[in-house]
Image (cartoon, rainbow, N blue to C red; front, side):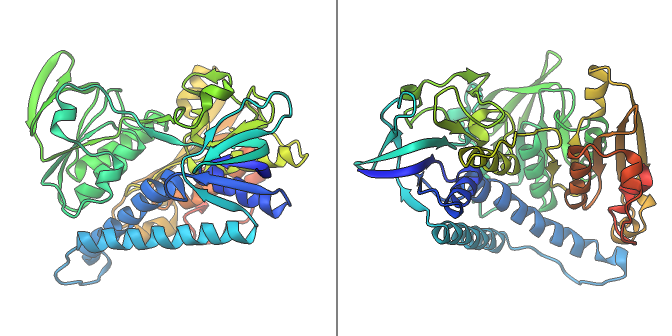
Length: 449
């Protein structure tokens, strides 16, 4: 029997980050992955979508180049080449991940892993894969998530896209109905709209991006509407028949005809197919319950990433993996979700960290809300001709920074400043005393304080 210090099921961001860290620190580690290393993030999510969105941004920049005194002549895109570039980048990054794990001495097994024993107390956990039995003192579950498919009548007979199919298409649909106005849906809506699709987004809530700052989400929706994306809020798709979809809003139904339907109605933890019923850990909501060290209720069993159902973000999963492996190694760092950054990679970008304005109002936290147009940043004005944006900062009574939310490029890059400030409990005066480079878009944070 093959014996290890740590066995990991799932090779996404949580799994491969944990494996490499464990290997580097002397733990004999085996990682099982039934599909492709990198998980959803690398193969069907974060990296592929951002590759496509960057190509769309380059195309849009070329189309609008005259604003900056540059003439590009005829501008065109080649979707098959965009998809081919995306595939090349995924292969390159996957190879890098594998190289890192190999260097750390991690054994990688391709195949479906199934937990076979409960492992009472500190008894080793047994896992079967490809007909072989592996034994490990500790087990880390990183099985990820899968798309939620709503039971819309006629949908399964008609055919539809999830992000997987949308990332592989060789043709831009004439029209696209996006079901769900969360991050995934809005990003794909932005991409296909930029390439010429007539895009409609249907969202059941009264605003898109319900987990982001509400005011800035509405401003982003307005910006995307100007580009031609149609939004139906407080609405749902009630049936599909071929190219025809029926949308219901406030009891009224309307019929629209579309070329393709993209489902982006959220994701759910993968809890079946790997023997979770053998372990029988305590569940919470729709995921596996963990404590602040990422331990489940089963001794010696940890869980990280989307399987916990808490924060379905790759960067959260990586930090959770670091906390879990650190605990195995005898460290006692606790997982903190106080300043997890969230980003929507549209054009313009939207990013936030910490509490939203709605959250502090709901929790009745005394606070001050400050905000400035992004045009107060000279660098932003230079790089974003005729563009709008906002930086919003929420401070507690004592000046502690509770939340930062930014609409405008490149929000994804400068939100890290905010995340660090919130995580470390910095006050506005502390951050304002830091010298920011000039000109830099990040100065907007200092200016807003």
